Picture 1 (cartoon, rainbow, N blue to C red):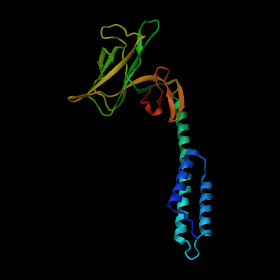
Picture 2 (picture 1 turned 45 degrees about the vertical axis):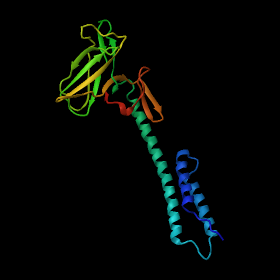
Picture 3 (picture 1 turned 135 degrees about the horizontal axis):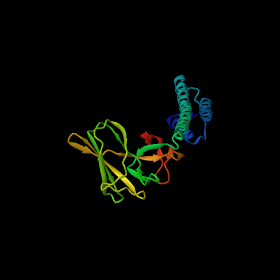
Length: 233
């Protein structure tokens, strides 16, 4: 009599089912165990009496189903941990609502100070990997032309933010109807490079996305992940 064998292909199918169940949730670990035990009992009933299954073979197969069950339980635990992490990040993100943050970007917005007729500009920032001897900030107009420049002097590694006074090089005030940008040039010895700029944004809310909570920075800016925040002002 031919003997059905729980071989590598059958075990591979069980492993594949375990991986699929972790994603779809359609088959639990107990169901996988029941399927395996049914196959094992069938094999024992139909084995050749003159050549029965070795104890080591049965032990090996039982060990493999234990591994499959362990993977199933590990996937469940990891899923619960991920849910807890997402919930913690969402709670952390809600604390930023109404706060100003520095995130990657180079836009500068200009607003009026009210009755005084003055203007105020949103901060400019930089995240330096190492110290620099000087950082030049060029403020550019809507067409990309440089309308004002200033230097910060030596800076240590880390996040720094600066304020532009909203005055153009000719002494006139920046327009509140325009969006300006900043370009940065860092100097180290005889070399220069352009570090990535940071711009100011106001957190309006939190959006729960597929990849975790994101900060709503208003209609003019794309949402950003919590990990993109470099400084809270």
